Image (cartoon, rainbow, N blue to C red; front, side, top):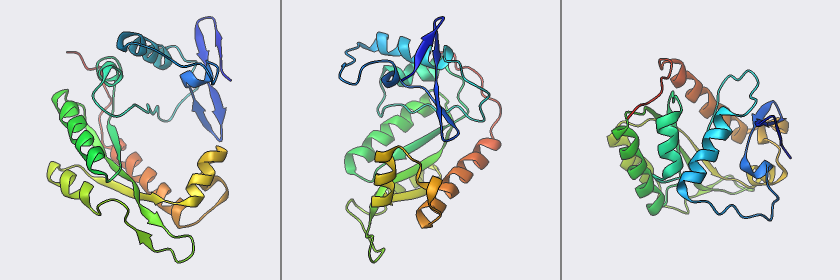
Length: 202
């Protein structure tokens, strides 16, 4: 668990990644029943009052939609760019399009998107079964000129790694690792072309 020292959050570092989450500060059985303004206030504290070490990138994992936390992030945090993580389900696609419209209205750059759960890869034959409509994301997002960074299928190896809290690439060098590393490289390359972020004021 994390700790608070002199009103500053002390993050947790593991596998070379420094992480901060409200889940580190409360008991696992304690529900966080917050209204929008309270959630937004704690979000700002997590970003600006965490004792971050020297970072290559600060990645904020935000909930989907167009709610208070995303609005607060857009207004208070200098943003170099947004990476959308979408599944090819109908509702996810529609939520993504709404989120894109909001980001464009706020002049926040969209670097591209990752398609998650892009089919299920059989562990035996490696055939990918498309549980959700194939190419639905590309059909909807390509006309908006949003780049595809890559597709991650439902894969038992990745699920096992996530459940254990160990990055898949930490112990395995395989096709799945290559896909993840390729996506990360593409995002870094796209970020390198962006100017230094400045706070957005509305």
